[in-house]
Length: 134
Image 1 (cartoon, rainbow, N blue to C red):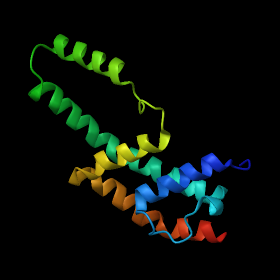
Image 2 (spheres, rainbow, N blue to C red; image 1 turned 90 degrees about the vertical axis):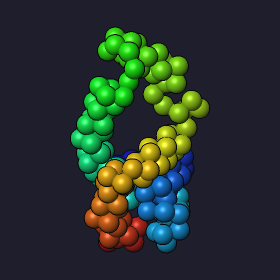
Image 3 (cartoon, helix red, strand yellow; image 1 turned 60 degrees about the vertical axis):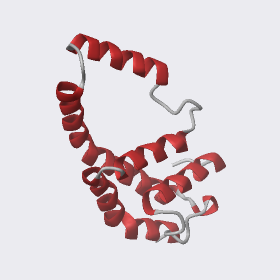
């Protein structure tokens, strides 16, 4: 992997804090981020996405069918309007805020929180070793 920029390293360090908690991973500073650390963080984020994706589909379907007022066409029109108004990303295109918002939303629901906790637990040693170059 090519040499990473300071901005990328800062974002990866922030994502690590978002998953494991600020100060939990002792070597987590932007200066210590290397390609192995980036690969571990990528694996963790993918694991969280895979775990939560199935549950999100069930929740979205349930909410769409049972809690939304109006006809299906009114609901879909509202969803499209909301997506257009708010955009898919953070309004300031702040990548770190987008990830933190995602983590916070997942942590707010017990079943989704298990996705973050299990991915963090499963990969903690890998991350620590990657920081040490092992």
